[in-house]
Image (cartoon, rainbow, N blue to C red; front, side, top):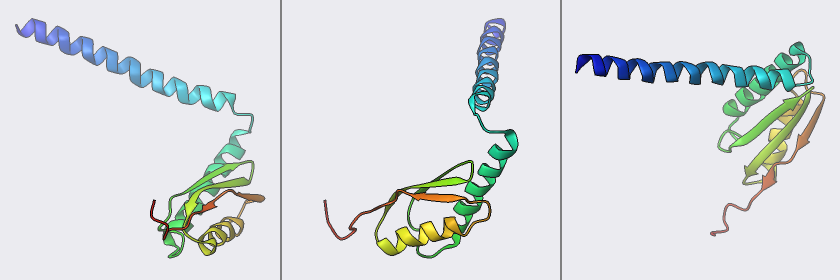
Length: 116
């Protein structure tokens, strides 16, 4: 009985190892397909992180779920907000972040008072 449980545990664990290694391989595959230099990828990631941090600290923008993607200094903002003030504030915060070249503000303003 113990031998059977031990063998079963080893088989399950060996399957997990393949999953973990496979997951790492997928990440490396994605990085290999990216045309940007590694330094640019790191810079873009830092820009995205800075913007998201500023959004959390901002009283107007923090209540909304705004997507931020950065590619070679071009920031694309997506999501839905409740006012043009929030949309403009999100764009201004992104534009005022170091390293940002262009802001593509695709945030949609949705009337929050309209019950659907």
